Length: 116
Image 1 (spheres, rainbow, N blue to C red):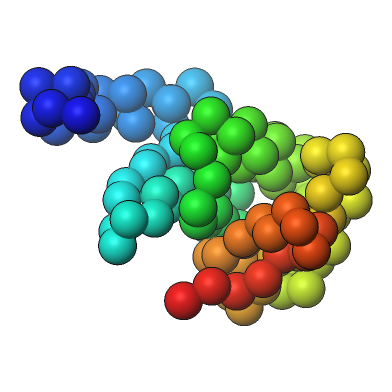
Image 2 (cartoon, rainbow, N blue to C red; image 1 turned 45 degrees about the horizontal axis):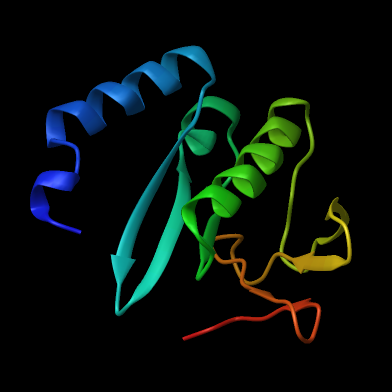
């Protein structure tokens, strides 16, 4: 991707503000050491829930998963370390690890594992 392919900082901030106003959360993605990190912003402010982060998934899948988890938070669910999901993606088990800030899906083992 070329630098001109990325949105401006002002565009990103405007989108985050609009999402926070409409939904109470937004999503942000960034790349670090060749891994894509996508995480929520606003769950802690709006719903007193820790933010949730996915590592290593493409942006579209990460957004689908995080938006589903955020909707559950809005509906009153509270997640904690070792929370196990079997009903988000057919055939894939997800587990929240540590402080809910990291979920990593390993499809061959069908587990979520901490990755560093």
